[in-house]
Image 1: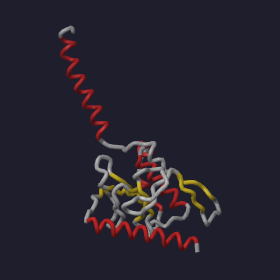
Image 2: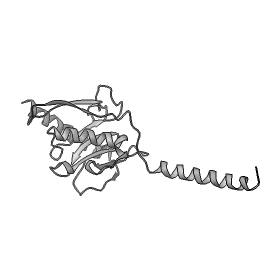
Image 3: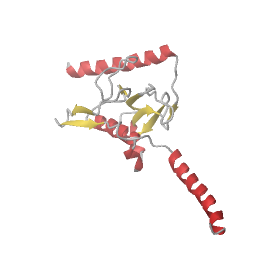
Image 4: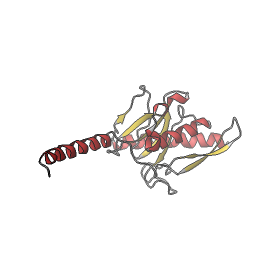
Length: 185
């Protein structure tokens, strides 16, 4: 009964989120490289979802870096080295941890609110639980209990803007220093 009730509550929360978005009339934009499968698009939420039943199908649907009302779907198995120390990495690690312990995101996506991250409670608008730093899981196949860690508060968004800005500042500094060096200043 506990497992069936848990699935029913998750299904109900996804249904409520869908109705909320339709009621608001807001369609959040998505940046994704996934198939055309329907993924939850809830602003200011992290949703662990999947476009199929396999580990490679797991997606972390999360806010964009500079537009928090927009969301992006990240293919968790394809993130690279530096991504692991940013919010994309912690979101994907969290979703993959839940998947490894038996969560079926293809049938039932799991979402939590990033508003007031880490504090117990429910989002007043979407009625979903607030994301917590740790979530205990129980793997029915192995009998192991572990905690899946979501340290969204420790990491920043990874953007492609920062390396370009560093290069631009370096070039500007070089352009200013070179003429001064010629004149012996």
